[in-house]
Length: 99
Image (cartoon, rainbow, N blue to C red):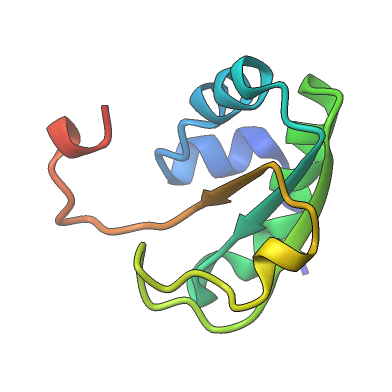
């Protein structure tokens, strides 16, 4: 099985992780929940490792079902989460919606 790197993922997907890093720093978030759709869960640790290297935050990875931006995890408010980042993919998503 291939060991994925963040560079591999950036070649394959438009993850815009620099934008996530900027947001985490702007919000001064200490505890961040990252939610992945099924197709990207296999890369969750690679992505979170990258985010940890670039910020001072700690991360939870939500591996439950995720069917879109409105599908937020139940009970998140009880964990002391400062920020939630939803990572997704959709080839039909216009670029102007993600900027």
